[in-house]
View 1: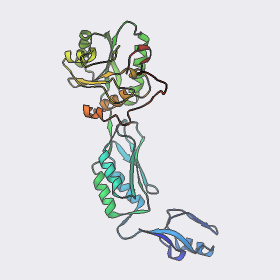
View 2 (view 1 turned 45 degrees about the vertical axis):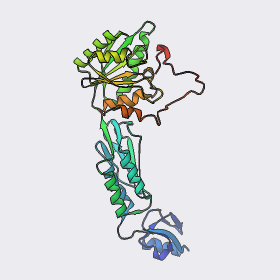
View 3 (view 1 turned 135 degrees about the vertical axis):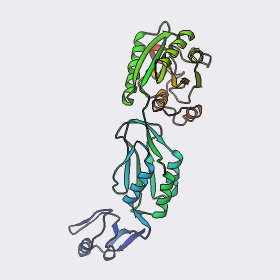
View 4 (view 1 turned 180 degrees about the vertical axis):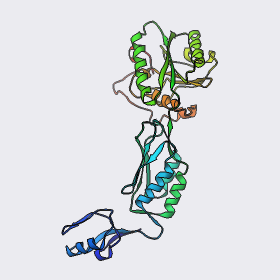
Length: 339
C-alpha cells in the first residue's frame, strides 16, 4: 500500500486517510476520492491531501477483516459484516468461550496491520454477546500476510462450547450450628448461577457431615441420573482424607484434584463418580460474587474437561478480590466455612 501526501489531482481513486472539508466539499476518512471531489477541493484551495492507494496483491481492509474473521470463528460463533476494517464475532448460543491462545498469538505476531482480540478464554457467554473482533489497522494489507494469518487461525481459534449438562444434583452436609436458612440461600444462589446455562437443580439432599451418609447420597445421585453433582460441605475440606473426598472414594468415585490457585475458591475439589463430575464446593460458593467455583462449574456444564493441569494454570488472574484490612484467611459468612 502506498501512503502519503499527494497533489489533490493525483489522488483520484485513492482512499482519503483523513476527513477533508473545504468549500462545501466533504471527503470522509476511508472513502475513495472521486474526480468531482478532487476538483472541488482544488477549487477550494486544497493543493495536497494524505491518501492511500492499494498496490498489486493488497487486500482492502473490509475484505481482509471478513476473510480472517471467518477463519477465526469456530462452532457457535457468527461473523458480523465488516465496517472500516473491523469485523466482530458474536456467540450463537449460551456456553463457555474456548480460545486457542496460541493460534490468536500467532495471528497477532504476523503483521502489525492485523489484529484479533477476544474475551478471556473460558468466559461464560450468552447468545448475541460479542466474543471477539478482527481489526485491520491500515486501509489494506498484503495478500501474503493475510494468507498467513488465515492459515494460523484455521480451524476456528474462537468457539463457544454450548452447555450440555442440565441436571444438577446437590448434596448439603449438615453440622450443628449450620442454619437451614444458610442452606436455602445457598440453593437460591446456585439456582441463579445455573439460570443462564439452562441447567436446573434436579435434586436437593441433606445428610449429616459424615462419610457413610454422604457416600450413600452420592451413589444415589449417580444412579438417579444427575449429570453433575455439587457437594456443599458444612465444613471446609482440609485434606484428601477429609469427609467429602473420603465419601467420594467410598462411593466408588475418584478425586481428581483438591485445591486451586484462585482466591476466593482455594478449597475446591473436583472428582467423579462414573460419568458424573463432582464439585466439592468451597465456602465462597455460597456467595453470589464471582469466585473459583464459577469457573469450574461453567466448564463442566459445557462438558469441557477440567484436569489438574487446567486448574493449576488458573493462578495468573486468579486473585479475584481482596480486602486490604483483612488480617486472616477468608471466612464463609454465617456457615463459618472457609473457601
